[in-house]
Amino acid sequence: MQDAVTISVAEAAGESRGAERWRLIWRNVFPFVVVGGLWEIVAWAGIFPQRLFPPLEQVAASFYQLTVSGILPHHAIETIFRLLSGFALAAVFGTIIGVLMGRSRRAEDILLPLVSIGAPIPGLAYAPLFLLWFGLGNFSSILLVGFVSAFPIIFNSWTGVKAVKEIWVRSAQSMGADDKRLFRYVILPGALPYILTGLRLGLAQAWRILVAVEMLAAVPWGLGWLIFGARKFLNTDAMLAGIVVIAIIGILLEKYVFQKIENYTVVRWGMTAK
Amino acid sequence: MQPIAIRDVSLNYDTPGGKVQGVTNVSIDIDASEFVCIVGPSGCGKSTLLNIIAGFLTPATGQISIGGKPVTGHGMDRGVVFQDFAQLFPWRTALGNVSFGLEMKGVANPERDRIAREQLRLVKLEKFTNSFPHHLSGGMQQRVAIARALAYNPSVLLMDEPFAALDAMTRDDMQRLLADVWKETRKTVIYVTHNVAEAVYLADRVVVMSAHPGTVKTVMKIDLPRPRDPLSVEFLDCQKQLMAHLGHNTNGVAH
Image (cartoon, rainbow over all chains, first blue to last red; front, side):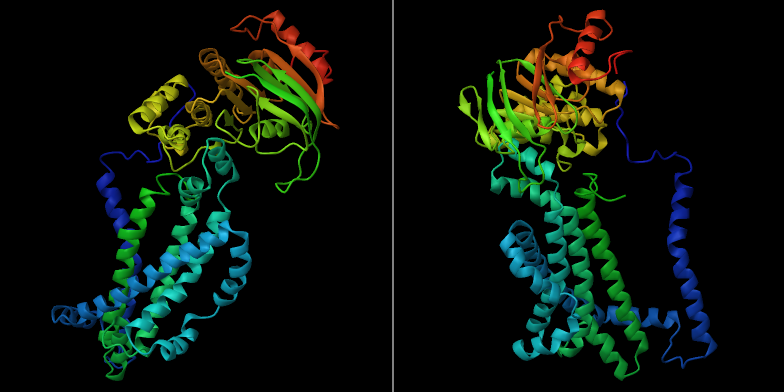
């Protein structure tokens, strides 16, 4: 029988599995060990005052202190709230607009020039405008995050809908799918790889704008505020602690949200580019 | 199962969907449960004709009717199988793909599942109901496509070179399987191919088309008993005749 099921998971030999895993961990950790080592050397060599370039143990200590005192979690929670609210807005409206542009010629004609002009403008350039219109604080920063991070989502959803294979559409139509069901059962899943890419880029965009805007919008809490505010008091260790938290949140979102969704959908379906 | 009447069908212009290889004044009558192959050189419009019958293209003149009802677009009285393996929905399992037409038809679940499994059994894929298409070989994907096109029980099966992209050995297996499936389901089949041996193996009648203009050159009846033996003298004879109709040089052995 020449029909063979291709098994995508490589067969792992039982014994070398543990050793293999340690090697993998080491390979991931290695670059950080190198950078950490260099950091320590610079910090202890006294090139910069230690206040401005604290050694890692000092950063770790203040990270710990700020965490147990509840300050860092409070900043983080406020930031995550803004990030997710803004991103949710962008995800919902961005996907709707992008899919609409992909499906309707008229929507494409009207919206594409606007989106094309709006997208390359750095998000921070809109910030003063939003602050003047919507005032200082949460509302305008969430709105701005949503607005700016919608662009990559719009673009990718639009491309994704356009990239849906004609043969899927024809197959579905020949099996009696009307426009509504064609959209739900074929266009949406067919465009999903692109939509997910758009969401990922959108989230990265949301981070970039949020950290900066937290400073401008004069919000009392938030990692962006923490980082910028700490500069006034030369609290470099607090700044670094803030940066570390951003990195951790980013990794967690990537690993436990995006990768989970991807593994359940496009990876399982074999729709990822390899 | 329904007879098909194709009357003076022509289509000779650029459609919005792209440039179409034209057909001119094509008339064919196909009996219920008949297996008809359409062969011809590339550019003779055989795929265009199939797409017109499927309802994806509208003919400029002429009419097609299936079971007496005129064709006005795609409909569930026809199942379509394409050449491209990518026709399956990658986000649905084999079972999910086969169920699609039934879902569209509104068949509820225990029944839908039963029919879909039955169809997969017909193409010998009952062990792969829960596999996603990217885990299946090309031949298996085409079998799923056949099961999918049959599942909602259309009276006509339209096939556009479904095995052309398969390797020779798999193709032989698939032709045997299709002959069995046809014997069991008695669908009216229109099968486009450029493979002479395939046409002789499968068809009750072979419609030979010529290019410029894309039109029916001749129709050849294949009167061999089934199952057919591709190595028999009669089979090779039929092949030679068909090749002569196609204008091939027949000195020497078939393809």
